Length: 263
Image (cartoon, rainbow, N blue to C red; front, side):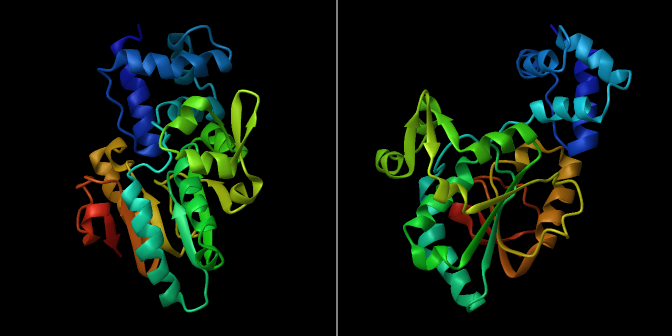
């Protein structure tokens, strides 16, 4: 069992580097996430790994520990009505406003890719929209990004929200995994991004998706992240949050029932 001082150190590390909130009372959860990382980094136990971090194990090891504490997005078509509204109403309106210019859409905490691939598959069924859209995705976790870019998902992962018809159309069986079609993977451009950093170099975007991530931030970090996301929105741009994420501060609700806010 990881002792409380070690949990507190890890929580401080997560807050300082990524603004993340770590519940130090959930020792078992922390240990289950950190254990594989410690072994991968060559340490027998999480406690030894944390001690090495205290003694300056290096940037790569420190970020590996922080990234292990992130809860990744891992479900296709989560809140299916949201995707339906995006493709039927929100994105067509953005395309109309852009009048021939590309509509830039960013999944800002993409996890292992299910969210942005869900949108890509829906756009593939609407070539009129797909031609006008550019999809971008980012995450803090390099391992999550590697998995997302591979497009390989287990039986359990494809069963989480993916309709059978889309599994048949867009995936092929590859051993124990299902491989997403290259044409869908190639619709997305990837980048590692820390939402606590200045994001101005990335924008502007017409639509930013940052769903179900706000609760993972420390309260004092949340405002900074929110402001960073707002700063990359193009004029008239929109920010999509998770349903029920009411800590959006002074954002003006645009379509509250799907978590969409105006710039």
